[in-house]
Length: 144
Image 1 (tube, rainbow, N blue to C red):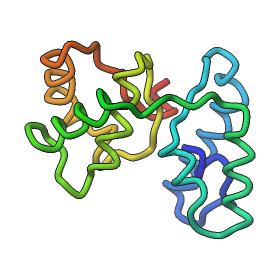
Image 2 (cartoon, one colour; image 1 turned 90 degrees about the vertical axis):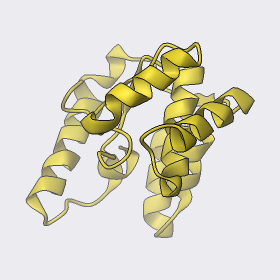
Image 3 (cartoon, one colour; image 1 turned 180 degrees about the vertical axis):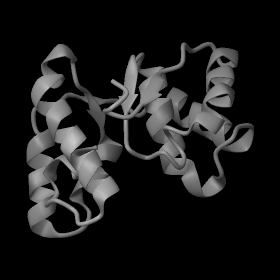
Image 4 (cartoon, rainbow, N blue to C red; image 1 turned 180 degrees about the horizontal axis):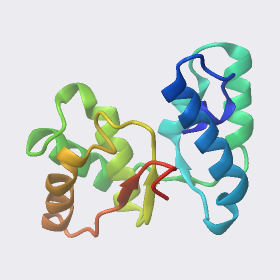
């Protein structure tokens, strides 16, 4: 989401629409929520072009970071080993698990391949409950 917030407008109309939706959400809806991120988000924000990375990190600078603990790592492994996420999506699984184990109500993302994927939602939620956690609501900015 942060990359959509800080990037130059994209020529692809779908991506440009997501960027605008993200900017609108950030300006109008953000104050209604207590935002959090994780070290994973910081690591992703640091990647790529230095100037754009600085912009992403600036947007994240006052957002508290969640801990990535053993419980999150274990739940992420469950999502990959017993769940719908493939091994190559282990970082995406850790994003979800970090939100779940920290009691985050909403996980906001544009990653619809492995995170905000309706085909995976029921299984992720089932695995969360089996492990004793209430699932996080995973959605895109336009859904929230």
